[in-house]
Length: 368
Ligand SMILES: *Cc1c(COP(=O)(O)O)cnc(C)c1O
Image (cartoon, rainbow, N blue to C red; front, side, top):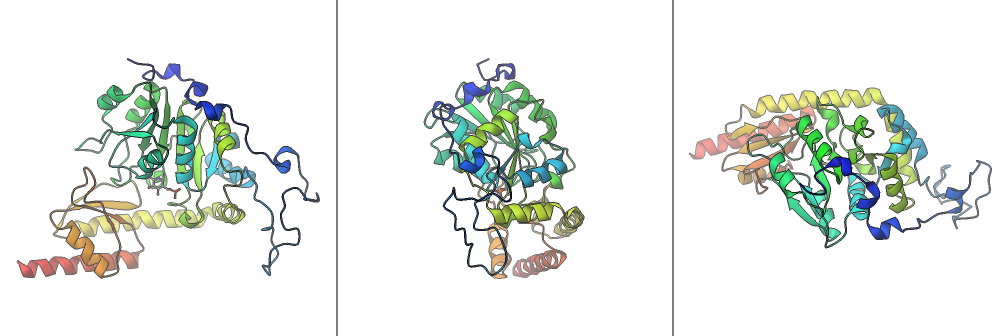
């Protein structure tokens, strides 16, 4: 037992780096005072005449630093108060901000469970944070709870759990996530980038229950908006306030805020695309099972499939590239030997992929 193996000892301020605790955030006249539509803005050195664009717009103005309109939309959609919502320039920015708030370079460490999303480690290393890796279990890609408990010490600040996990595609067991939330007095980041493709429920509505929980979601996957870079963090009001204090003041540009609001209003098309992806995932699963060199199709709660291709993964990967089809080679990643990660495409794309795979299997059959 040690100081971080007991979540009743959770104390937010004791986790925050000293330089952050003592920070005076950047402010602007507009953040401090209520503005009106008809106000005259001569405070931020913007161009009052506008941009050279030919259509009417407000792009000469700095964006809303707290993205209130967009947060209201997300709040409505997720049934979570806007004081519990943070918006980042992609989830990647939120991961970076979490490291900045909590981790002392050269002193603290984070804990991750490979094979998993690469940014938890990259971002940690950029900040000079040691990243402790405890691999998922070999058989089911689940958390190794006993090993995790034994590695936690006073320098463990952040635990990253990715569920559904990338690149393995499976959900992490709810009871294991809760076990960690209940027994760790540091910060638990639960990355739910793929939750909309899963049958499991999001933990976003449990942020009141767990003061140590930060849930990450994104508009990059199920919402089809990877290009506008909108990541979402759900957490206690206190954690969100710290995030707001240290983020770049204008981290989300006007264009992204506007486009996100428009997209979030079109739920019908969102659900239509979501249903299509699930249907196509099934199509691929069924067809992959007919391809001789694919030895395993892992169950997926995401918009991709992890497949095992015994001895031939590199060759298949290269054959597909030669045919202008790009998938992700994960064959060198721990516990993913000989695996490719394949994103679900449209029916046209999936048919072409399957066709090329069949061609390749005939090619090797003839060679044997
Ligand atoms: C794709 C992905 C994200 C999304 O990152 P953004 O910066 O929001 O585009 C986050 N986490 C995981 C595990 C992902 O696979």
